[in-house]
Image (tube, rainbow, N blue to C red; front, top):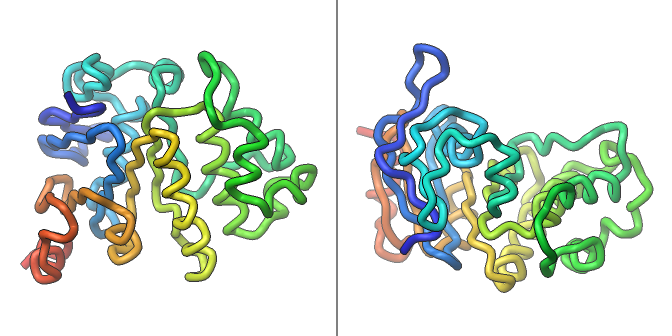
Length: 233
């Protein structure tokens, strides 16, 4: 059984339909890349999974349980966390306070705590008392990922984690992915950067205008097929 499935998932913003019958399956231990151009529906997909956009109950199934339409707080307690696009750190709080918020309301214990997040991103410990927004963009992204990990999620959703960052910083962030996976976390990465996403994923889905246009293992997909699925004819 897949850890998470979307089954004919559709999503709306008012009268505007953003997703059209999305069916996907994420197995435990997968690193899944969801690629597509701006406006393809990638962020809406993540928001529907984590309860920020409405969905039919059986359109999102986590560990065999229908969760579509549950409140975001309920979904987080089930073991799903998201690193949102734009990081969304709390500007009035320090780095460490932002991280600790991720542990609020978590159930039980797990590998991820302050010490292990600082091991994953060593540069953060020295800045632990600094205002989160005083950090560089790359370090802010590390705080956002660390905050999500503090809930010890079984499924981590990462929305555009490389957006606006220098290539060397992006490499550092993606270098942390094997350590995250090693703790049993399934990772879904939404990216416009196709090369970076495919380099770490064992499964890829391409969205175009709210529909799945391609899926499979990266090694099995030609550059031409990816290009056509991404941009269309």
